[in-house]
Amino acid sequence: MTATKSKRHNQETILFILMGLIVVGLIVSGYFLFVKKILPELASTPSQNPSAAIQVSPVKDEAAAAFIPDDEAQVLTLYFPKKNSDSLRAELRKVRQKKMLTAQAGQIVEELFKGPTSSDLYSPYPEGTGLRGIYFDDSTFFVDLSIEFGKVSSSGAAEEVLAVYSLVNSLTEIDPRAKVRILINGIEPIGDSGHVDLAGTMTRFPEMISE
Image 1: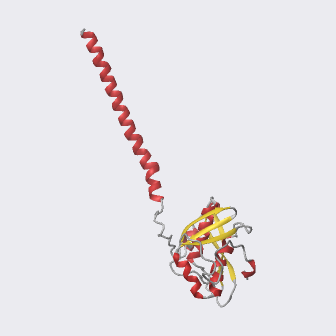
Image 2 (image 1 turned 45 degrees about the vertical axis):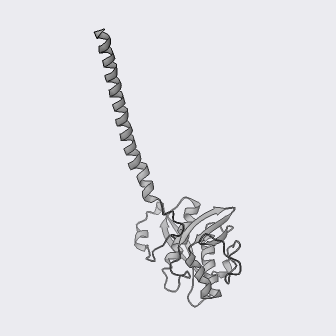
Image 3 (image 1 turned 180 degrees about the horizontal axis):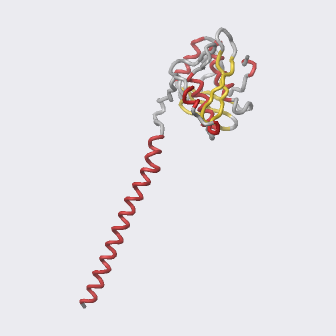
């Protein structure tokens, strides 16, 4: 009888130790999962507030670009309006390479909003214009811009055309056959709301590009 009780006690002790080890293992695994995966994702996740545009600093990143290793860098071709002209001119921008197509497109838009570095070029975008989102479907880039972009129509027909095709020509550097569709604050613009019909898709307009 005593031997049976002792055996049962030993089994309960072993079971208790095993349960304790399992609990400790779960705690340790949970800690490393949180630190290694969940915490970095939380830190890198952008705000889900749809009204919060991605604001891009106007400060140029020339110093930072100089430290990008050549095997991690790529050169973007951006188009900005020339001063005292109705044409666009290319400006090269060294950035860190992105692999995803939409990431590359978003990088182009953000670099455009930083403005040119050349003194004879200028940014055609209204102050505060930001990128809300971008995706690619059926050979078309859908670019969702903040509501400030709508103010470009008040600058006149020429300025609106330059702003639109600065964006379109820069994005189609990825693929000249691609099309671009602009949304403003998540809404498709009405065709007669400005000097340029933004209600449909737009294609590359190389005739606006000059030396």
